[in-house]
Amino acid sequence: MDPIAELGLCFGIAILLILLLQRFIREILRLWEQQNVNEVAPRILLPISTCPVCDGRLESHLMTRHLIVTHDMEVEKAAELVEVMRSEKAQSEE
Ligand SMILES: [Zn+2]
Image (cartoon, rainbow, N blue to C red):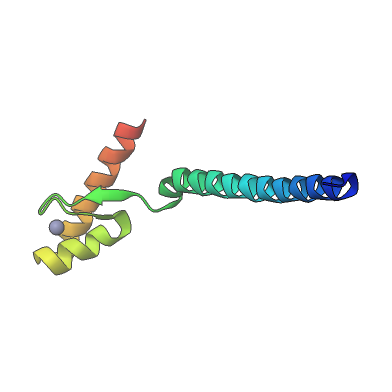
């Protein structure tokens, strides 16, 4: 092969490798960022509580409504129960 063509080929391969490497790095960074987001996400989400009646898991702010609607609980009783659960949770987090 004549040297100029060989040089051109080497140059071409080098560019190709750099492009592939860039893509690879970008892909890794993207996955890494995604992983970070996944790790951070649960803390951003609203706290999850366990329903004392059916052991179902749902967001804390939906618990009162869930107790009233699903378990036919009185509004005051439901609010009281959620308040107790909230203070228990706060204590366990301290
Ligand atoms: Zn329930």
